[in-house]
Image 1 (cartoon, rainbow, N blue to C red):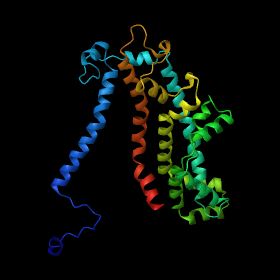
Image 2 (cartoon, helix red, strand yellow; image 1 turned 30 degrees about the vertical axis):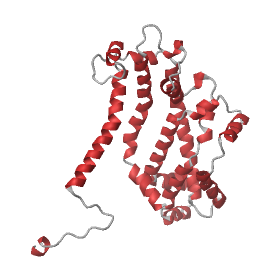
Image 3 (cartoon, one colour; image 1 turned 180 degrees about the vertical axis):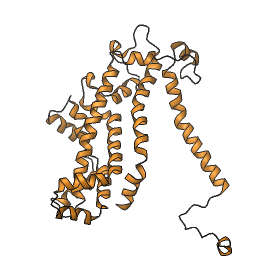
Image 4 (cartoon, rainbow, N blue to C red; image 1 turned 90 degrees about the horizontal axis):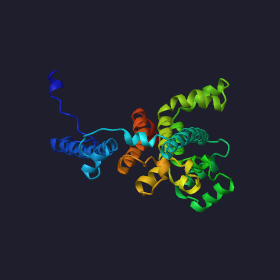
Length: 303
């Protein structure tokens, strides 16, 4: 007992943190400032979108103190407007695009993680080349036009269907699965697709969830492809509406923008659109956040 109590604390390794009251206070202050910098604008945006015209006018713009709460801006947006249609377009593109991109990335990453597979080296070299070179906007635009994808929803999905970063992250994770497990499955007569579906994917739920979230957030926030390839405003996604109407302050057709008659102030509608664009990411992130360390950081380090 005496030996245990008199033992000196072990020396910290060079990379381990040496805690001190000043350091802890500094980190707490820094985290508090970052949280306020993130939540402050979000609080103001939500409050402005829920305020009446009189409240917004009295505040001279963004509302900081809640007074009269009204959902008139949201009612205007979702009552036969271009915004409500854009929400449906973004939701469909996000669901279909995420499914396609995740499936293709898993198949590509699994094939690249097995040395000796068909065209392993050329495909791996092509993926790594995507990190360095981008063909450019004009060649991609000509290819999309040549394939007849202009003004179709596929033009919002196919040009960005595969991310080299996500493929590399998945490949790194797959490569750390013990080969003995896969070999035993082959001895039992399992094919590669069965091994992928029954063994590899159940062991890779964390990284798969994170990659799917990366794709989902990317599709939900994508507006550039729509600006290039979509001329029909009825097919615009929400991100392009946000860009045109909120950021650039370009007017939407009055009959579909919900800003006619006794409509609430324009600023309230703008802030309501911002809230609608942000909510899906806020809902999805807490469910995936717990997988980040295991799914991405661990996989990247091992890779």
